[in-house]
Image 1 (spheres, rainbow, N blue to C red):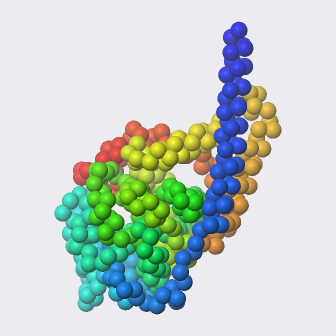
Image 2 (image 1 turned 180 degrees about the vertical axis):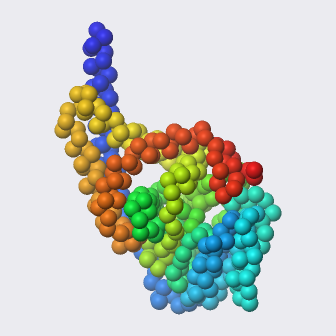
Image 3 (image 1 turned 90 degrees about the vertical axis):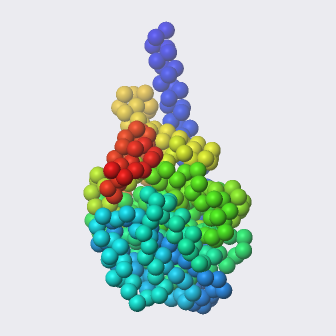
Length: 387
């Protein structure tokens, strides 16, 4: 009887894993269809260098003195006329404010202000209150943008029905660790664009957003999730989507691409991913919560499958599921590469196939329990506080 129950349990586990891989096949097909439906956006040269409304670019910065000069230079060189830039310093400890003040001297389009509250959301809220523009663009202080970024993102909001638009973000790096990060990040961005095109956006990135100020005010901004360390992008998108159904889109025009640097080491990378994953418990979207559970289960199955094959519970043919996964993801990367400038690196792709699932499982579990430091602040579960 005991052997029979073990056999029954093993069969159920094998069937569950098989179902996960079959469903993953359908998910890949859905992402391919969604990506084909993505609209690249209006060409910048078709809309001129200004729009009828004023635009406010908001940048919340904390301890970004070594990098923010580059972003300021990029903003100075925007091929766009009617915009302002508000840089708000979230209590930096490295002289970020002094760097910004010196870098924007003599340019009336720029304002540098000090945040009153603590955290990125408080800083963004304060800056948006000061903004003159009816369209808000946000990016991060450590990012780089092209000369047509403002123009291209604003073009997406030329459609009255669009309240919120997110653009693509790519990781730039030349070493193997950075290239692996770039591939993983491209998967997140590409999936987000594909699901948005299908009317069910799952994620976005605060490094590349454009939305109407009245939409932000209409949903009370970040009220309800102010204390959460992450989610200034995704939670706002969901609130606007709920208040204005069908109003969220993605811009995949290369002129709207924002670039950011890879994490310099494994510890910085893990801390960043723990911060992102920690917001899962506060996600109000049932679909997103279920998707997160599915992703966890799928990657858990990828980890378990070789073990089950070695134990004889799953036949060796089951390893073909891993081969299918690799080829499916390779095809998606080929689709996404022209937009997100993914470098060709077989070593990065193959190594990512080996370590990605174990890392996802580790981060998903650990993020719900640990506390850690981020830019000199302690992250306790979901909350953020000064030391």
